[in-house]
Image (cartoon, rainbow, N blue to C red):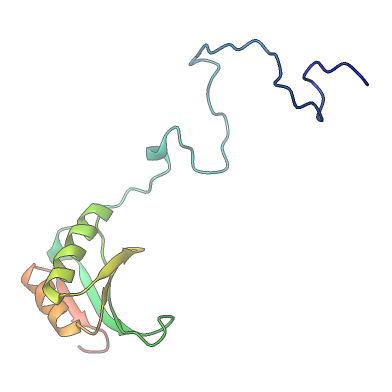
Length: 134
């Protein structure tokens, strides 16, 4: 049996290495990263303009696709930051008395609430219409 010094794959004893915990900002940098870096997440974020409500044309439609027959009111066409969308979604869900979510710059409200959602959006200054109507 060979003597184990912590360098072999089958060795179960902890390796005895000298630990240096010095941080050098000149040499400790990411040169290339294929995935989103945890060091600077703002560098990979996409800038989203936050247009005023009067400049946005929203489409409201009712969808059942991929939801096992359940109806969902989908509002799309937003040009807002995610924080603004979440606040608006909270208001719409409260007005409709149902749940919902924000996905990919769209708001989904559970149930068939298209007329009520359009009324609330127009009251807030948005240009909203139900899909298929002029």
